[in-house]
Length: 491
Image (cartoon, rainbow, N blue to C red):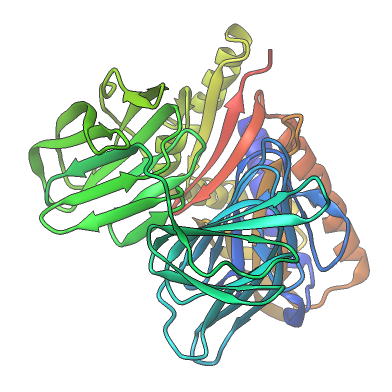
């Protein structure tokens, strides 16, 4: 697999160096929305085209549609930090997405089915807007968290339910009437019916509360792969009805608890001896169903991972407690489940994964690459294979974030000297096959013969790299500084 990876990285550098892509056609992540695919079963239509498997790190702009099947789940993150979590059986269209001259967000989404959870950053200017439209209503917000549920009725109409967790949502029924839904309230809007005169209280639900000491930041990842928490300056509120409180320490409260295994990823700004993180399961009445503690000293730079199984029996929460904490090398390793291959050299890692897959059938597994090691490997591979390239490529730079893997290189082809850039994104098919492609490329014009040659080479390289994976991929994760393939070994 190491040889395949080397060929892949060199081909990516080569395609960045050779292909011509008009700058006017590039959609930048800083002006659009970035998609994170949490479960396979998510596809997308770009600009009214056919639906294809959605890829992690892809960008969405006006006219693009994301839909999820019975198992699919995804998160759209907009350039201002606002997020929209898309649940199974949902369909969302970006009707209009604009970044104003002042950098403000102007967004209109059309949701025709399913459930979404929106965490909207405080809109900075009067011309900012965040609107969700359904067949029965229009919801307008200015910095809040709320849930939108669109349900089909037997008579062919739909009913939209808005549940506000924070701030307020102004809801205008398509048939007339407006109602304001404050925090802790909900409203049902039936198609062809006016808005009701007032919202109703949201029934209380069990909650999961995790509290940590000052100086410790942590993120909670629920069994669906959704995140909530604060680590450093990065705030995540993807889990429905979650809140992050800071002060003397950090507290994460999750108002929608699902049964399964939660992951906890903790870091520290300064060394903390015997740092204690307490998890409490609170019943609908507020009484504690359980209380467990994770205690461990954390040094600066540590990334600590533990898991917490949570059960729900007749509305009562239960847990056997935190698993023994372990140090992981990256947030990608922290998100992964089962056996994680993230340490050691690339050769040893690849060999270990292949050997494990041969012995363990259908076992959960993840393969993790970090930005630093891929950068070093790409530079070394390029040095080894420079003689096979028809141009001189130098100063290769590689970065990874939630919008994909980004490459840049200086290229000299005769008298032509350019800086070329390109982005790689990835995803999976419903049957576990890895998909990878270039999202966009920026470089200078080249002869068509050279361009066709590199297109063919990159297609072969990407296919070979994807076929070399000894696992059935259920999820691809691009995160700050790392890239993970998460799935199971073949059965």
